[in-house]
Image 1 (cartoon, helix red, strand yellow):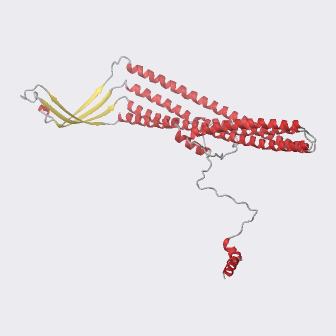
Image 2: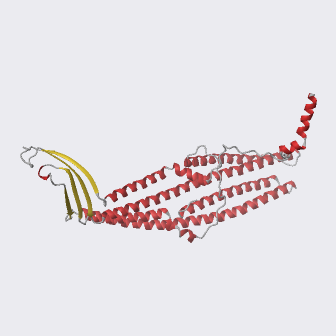
Image 3: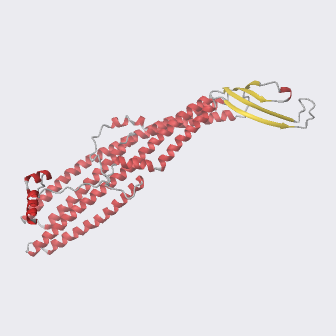
Amino acid sequence: MARLFLTLFLLALTSPAASATEGPAMSPAEPLVPLSSPTETPPLTLADCVALALKRSETIAIQRELIKETEGRFLQALSGALPRATFEASKEWQDGREGSSFTLSQIPQRKFIFSQPLFSGFKEFAAIQGSRAERRQRQYERTRAEQLLFTDVADAFHLLLEKAEDRQALETTQTALGERIDDLKTREQLGRSRPSEVVSAEAQLRRVEANLELVRSEETTARQLLEFLTGISPLGPIHDEQPDVPPLGTEEEYVAKAKDRPDVRASEEAWRVAQKEVGVAQGDLWPDINVESNYYTRRVGAAAGVDWDVLLKMDVPLFQGGRAVGALREAMSKARQAKLTFERTQRETDLDIREAHAKLQGAIARLAALQRALAAAERNFRLQQEDYRLNLVNNLDVLKTLQELEDARRDVISAHHEATRLYWKLRVATGETL
């Protein structure tokens, strides 16, 4: 009976119905695809690294605080044109005999004081406009600081990619040389290669290993730099979402964007601030007219029945020893300096863009030439291998072409990332980032 049940159970497992419920069977030749772990972090992109660096940078934090500082100065300037209200309570003691209201021994008083400036040479309005311009200046300066930080992150990001790809290229060459040495040893045993050929290949392999250790050290240094900028340690894998440099436009197209670069706009706003400071200094040459009102909640003596009073006051400056005139001349000189600084910033920006464009243009042309050289080196290496199998060339010729192929591949890697870094520098020179 037990055997019968076991036989029926095995038949049920191998029946077509059971196979249909289990789903299609996997072919033995079909590879198993491992599922990614839900805790596996995706590679960091350049945008991710920039966002992390912006959160970590102390320079950007200082720029934010400077903006808050200018907001405080704006409120101070605005208060000069608004009315003021205070409450004042006082109590005076004197040697009085209490005989009349003028000889009281205690004189308490409580009152509300309202004051409103009517005219002061419009310096309050100039100060308000100047504080607004200063706030815009600080915002542009913060934006420019973020762009310069982006340049640092992009340089470190692509330096790390360059060293990683350079390491991979050297590892590929190392593997090829190892296979080459094994082949030479086999041919040496057959009497078709000389021992010097094996030694020559081993010497070249040792040089590759030495370069590989140097590149690994440089890759570690580049990773530490990016970790310092982003604040993530250890830094995970990174991925470049834009592997190729976009087509380059004309120089004039990039120069036309110079006027909108944040540091140019900040310099222009600094000039406006200096101009408004001239208006503030000119206000000291005009008379001040203010009105002040008091409302009394408690008075004693002869003024006990007076509940309020109003005072109109005009202060005309006649002679101040040259203080106001000197301050005005100082403000006018600072305004001229700010204008010259703005003009110099404009010219330096144009030069910066033109230099970045010329360097990128040369880097792109160099990269294209090196890519053609790499293609030729790869074809030459394949042909040399075929000739070596036919005993048309010796091992030294093959090793020489392999060295040329390694140099060409590493040159292309370096030139590609140099062109990418110069591309981002050109974008930042025009006031743009991602």
